[in-house]
Image 1 (tube, rainbow, N blue to C red):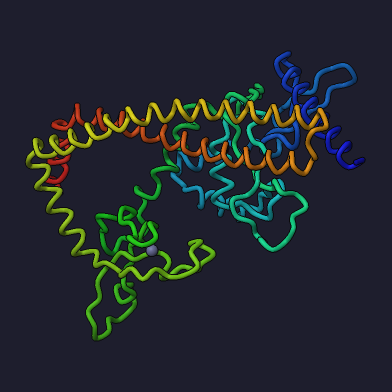
Image 2 (cartoon, rainbow, N blue to C red):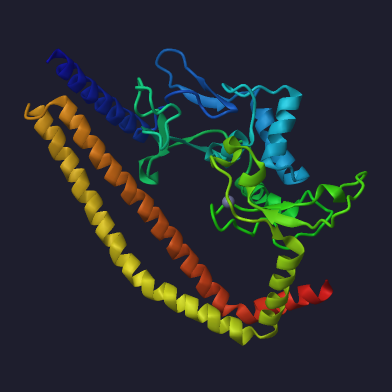
Length: 375
Ligand SMILES: [Zn+2]
């Protein structure tokens, strides 16, 4: 019984602290839990004076450098991480920088002047590292909260927002612009997908094409291949190798190139295709809109259920174990709804793009034809 009481007290305290923080933030006072973004530090004022977030003179120059390398030298996130490691710049907690940590940093809105508190909440991880173990903390993973719940905290900017946008654009398009392999100009690099696992197939060049390598008796060709064939399971996240076959790049490229050319010679065919797709999108958009409404309504219902659960618990009608169990079930459904809502958003965006393309299809075709002729 004492345990239940303690648990109840704890939830109450957590909730009160959260509300207190929100209140403080709205009053313009600093709320920040945990370390500030890389490049900043928290400065506690003398008694009575407010706490502020200010620039960390040791870390901030590296943040500016990272943006500079990406925008001016066109380094990829991976290359930035490599350079930082080589220069001996230590990240806050991890042993070294990697592609992911650099990408997360470049995306952080703090660097253009607005940090966000309350951006994440703890959640159960999708996949446990050790499913057999009983974890001390079930919610060991982090999940983005809905944007309305973020609390903006003004901080000194380290780069302009134009620069951040440029950097993100560079990172996004890097793999298309800097193909490493120049022995064969793969037309469909990064565009061919494995039919079995859905991963992007790698553009492979036969070893015998490499410089300083004599060609064996057999003829070799450039090809596209599922990454699970050659890469380790840790890298692909796929335990078994796909049975999909490699595809000869020269043949596939040829087929795609030819049909692309035919398409572009006759914009009206393309227009019909796009119109059909746009119509298809429009008709399913109606269904999606009503589905979205249903989801919002269901989300509200679940919120009410959650509130009732807590009431029942506080009135002593519910054991804490049951409260937790039922709360978790609610959370799972809410998570699923959120995911579906995101999917619907993405569909809506792609529908809008299709409409745009349809409007400009002739200009688009003419421009592509020009490009093809120049080759
Ligand atoms: Zn595959």
